[in-house]
Image (cartoon, rainbow, N blue to C red; front, side):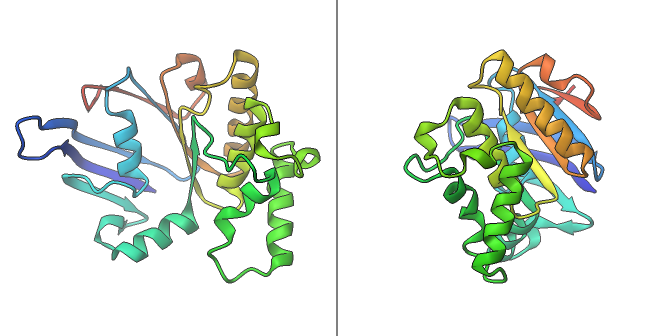
Length: 221
């Protein structure tokens, strides 16, 4: 379980242009949940995702994973925790354009020494097969369509067996057909046991989710 308790965050703290992006936000995420966080641009959605996922220490409050406060860990331990437990999916894919799909998916495995090259190959192939792109694994990222790029990004997020996936506007750059396919893929991953936190501004993306939170001016409504 993930607990977010009384989290607030300010940018430019103490300066004349100080901005309070989050204001006393509290909620919990159970194992296996598919949570949607929806709100207009500037509502604090991405700040909240960054705080929950261990990327941004909040000004106030705590974030715990199974009673482990992630911001009380040493910095290198926080990074290790993220690498082993959390996968990220972004609107802009962040693929290396001249790398193949296979090479892009393998990137998160390279710093982790416990796997042999054979094990890495097996894990990457399994992840690509799961997102339906095994037949495109030798194509470079720039040769793929937008929907295919997002599938590669999802394969990269799950290749480490991450328990929790954070998806920040994963359909934002896609047409309606590809958006529908990506959301179906995420729902299938959730059915297989992945906990997913989805940031979106599209109401249709939140249909059928475990819980939907509405964020306005940094506050959960």
